[in-house]
Image 1 (cartoon, helix red, strand yellow):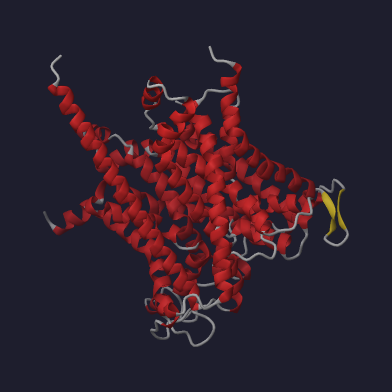
Image 2 (tube, chains in turn red, blue):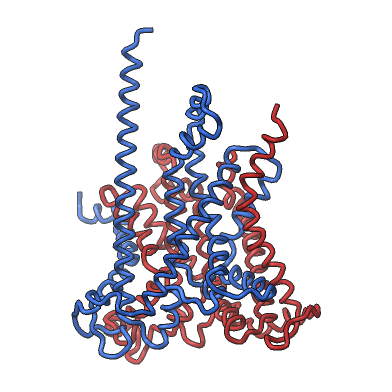
Length: 290
Length: 281
């Protein structure tokens, strides 16, 4: 028998932290919702007018940036998966004495500031940099071509910055893989390719799903890469929200844009999870409660 | 074994090593350009080698101020978020209670929300409440986005926790509070240390959420963002390289320490096994 007092213990333990999250994550969402249907200006103040046209205006004015954000983030996520899977696989099974060094390389970017990392890419992709000259010499790039201020530069930056978020969950799921299943597959005369696609890949699906979400979601909202590596024609929805809030001070439009972004992401995530299976996102949660 | 066979067998390893090179290249560029001697105000083209900026790493008052603000902010953030996160983790792992799914959701959703939305929402609250933006609003925001990460780190440590140790303490007459401070907390320490380090790093590195809620305060990332237009001083590269080295040394130390403890535990377990074998039943 547990007493009432004992049953209240977990609530007591959680309440300070959850209260913080409620006050500074949930409540702000309501105020953002309030702004998104208000009208006014910084000088005159804001009042609730239920102006739903804020949404339609925001979406129709910035369709390009929305599209671009999802395109760039999607491309970066696919690239992260294509680069990250072999890397995670190599770390888990092939690295041998290189294992620690390779794991270190994956988290090393976290030890330098995000902005400086992005600026380092600006240095690497500068018009007169050795990399760009090389690309021109092998004629991948025309002699007057640029890499900076192109979509490719922004996608490359996003890929670089979010790659660790892909590799770490992939590595975690690969490491947990029961190697005897791979041996069994071999014993049953599956080729290496068959084993990979029919055993390894399905068993690491939770890692792939977690990695895709952890890469895609922050990439969609990012504006750092577009600011440093892109030009005017590469601005993403994050750039618009940032400018509307902090430069133009049009809180109504900015709030409507933020909400639209969040709703699109929520719908995308829900569809994705329905398509890919539910245990993926909450996988660790269930383990925790078990 | 033919060369081709060898290449084929190790293909994933070579691809992996290429990706590793890709991960490390920008860091090498940052370090390299901390020794650059740029002619203009922009540090994007290699001109010549100098150690001048390493010698005068802390000559730029603006950089120093922003760095100091970031460090103070990260200190209080990691402390606050780790305390709040540890308490939540204890509740989630140790107790069955009504509403745990909702609590889990409240912890996961902030991680799954783009930073720009979190920053914008918080700014909406602060604008509505006419709060003046500065250190306090930054601290509120940083603790908020760090709590979830602290919970995850501490929780993973708690899951592998041997509850029998606490029962043993209770059997030996320790009060729940004594058990907590003398048994639970010391055993949780690696998780707590991990949470402190992670949340500190997250806070120092945060740009987007700070961009929204800093007002006229300038953290280190905000300084870099602002300086980008007028040219980033070479000292920024020097300090970034220093921070990188400090982090690497800290991580190496933690890993070595952990290995030492693990070996000790293994040895003890071995000794225990030997002892139990020696006792005739």
